[in-house]
Amino acid sequence: MWYLRTFGKRKIIEFIFLCLFMLFFFGPLLNLLLLAFAGEWQYPDILPKVWSLDWWSFVLQDDSLVRSMWLSFLIAAIVTLISLIICIPAAYAFARIQFPFRRFFLFSFLLTNAFPKMGLYVAIAVLFYQMNLMNTFTGIILIHIINTLMFMTWIPSAAFENVHKSQEEAARDAGASPIRVFWHITLPMAKPGIIVACVFTFLSSLNEAEGTFLVGVPNYQTMPVIMYSIIADYPSTAGAVFSVILTLPTIILLFAARRFVGADTFANGFKMK
Amino acid sequence: MTIKLSIENLSKIYPTGEGVQNIDFHVNEGELVTLLGPSGCGKTTVLRSVGGFIDPTSGAIKISNKEVHHLPSEKRPSAMVFQSYNLWPHMTVFDNLAFSLKLKKVKKKEIQMKVEEVLTLVHLTGMEKKYPSELSGGQQQRIALARALLLEPEVLLLDEPFSALDAKLRHELREELREIQSKRNLTMLFVTHDQEEALSISDKIVVMNNGHIEQIDNPQEVYNAPNSLFVAQFIGRMNFIKGKSVNNTIQIGDLTFIHNDAYTGDVTIGIRPEDIQLATANTRNIEAQIDKIMMLGHFAEITLKTMIGSLKMFVDRQQMEQFVLKSTIPIQLNNFLVFKETGEVLNNRRMEVYENI
Image (cartoon, rainbow over all chains, first blue to last red; front, side, top):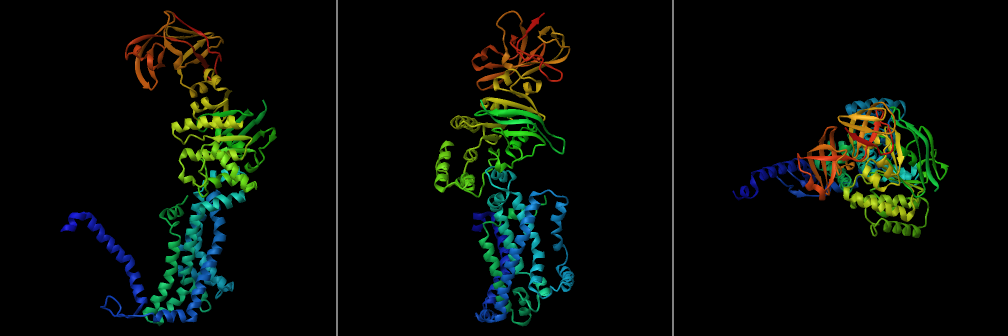
């Protein structure tokens, strides 16, 4: 047992656990990836018998599918932009101004996550019918923003709190007006937190299916919505191709923002002060 | 001498009832005045009021004879150096320094020149491209000082600027600050809770306690002639002995202390450790037993047991062989101060005799 001697029992057990976790996390993803490129793949085989790109060309050539991709990205971009505009001032206020019920308001952002989503959406749908927002682009944007408010307020708020007040004072002292101080000092210093919040807003909007399905169908079908029907109507390979396409932006965005995404950014965001 | 900064009857009362009251003093051009006091005494409140970060409840603040207390801090001709440096971490040293100049729309070439010049002044040439996180604490505070100097302030405000640094560095920076001051003829208001720092760098010390001013004097006077028990306690070391004064005499054991001001009531006698010495004559001696010896580098602190109580004295390293633990020596008191029960000094002159009966 040379390996027991070289590494010790503890190291080997740790390694086995690591392998199990890797399998648990990456196994499904790997399976998905293989499936997306499989032409023929039957149960006992470990690898597909025939590789093929057929379903890729099917998905990428189908106009309605391609359109849904554009729509998804457009919606995600608009949702991110709008919630940025709404939430950044709110986040700053939560971080800097001591107003009554501050903690209560901050906490209330959690409420949208406290209910079963479908129940909440149905209730909202009733409102949307009255306001003629059903089957509209605005309706979809609104329902997405409801989901992103919490991220967009909590994380930037923590980022603003981490900018010391005296650092703003130093800038005032140097002759900068309050607006300039915010623009040149506070905002750049809170940028990492804001970027992380933006990434998560973008991704959660991109992957949102239930609300979009309820409000948007049939006029507006985003990628996740279409995926439902593809999974129902086509072989599993088509669904896999679609999933990979949906996963790709997540991975790319997280990779690009990895400099800012850290455990502490989140921990700060979810601390109630 | 022209008055550069004057603070007139300033009060700031917080909703909790705490704050400062009736603060009244001035700083002459080219002077370094220190606000000294324990934490919570209100010294920072005064400083921040001058800087424009606190709205005073009443009173006036004038810089060069112009009222500034209604101006926002960006419009005041003052600059502040903060305890926590407060450099902007997302900017390089150059950008930190150039920030105020860019706001003033100074030409690029001139900015370059001024930044280089001030970096030379604080001994940090060639650091332009570094980020604050790459600098040591002492370097960061030098940059913060440079940033404040670039504002060409009429009054430079310093809020415990060196208290986060280690003792050696603190010493160095104090000296540098004094050098820079004389080069640029700066007018400074300096806040500290460190009495040694205040004594060593100030032209004038404003001692504060509990939201009011206790004493305003030059360092020598504050040390030699504290006008209250608080100042005596806070600055330097002092032995305190409780007693009772009847007219001009205070009787403690066999000892009679005589003072000039007739007063009857409880008093506290204060004696500086360095005013206790080995007796040179046979008259007016007190017997003292050496209870403890603590070596403090170039001198030792010796605790004596005497008939008037426990006393501490300082002895030079060279004279240590005369002091043996548990032995008895004759000592004399060269000076003492008498404080009333209210803390007020009874006679501000150090003097007096004491008689051995």
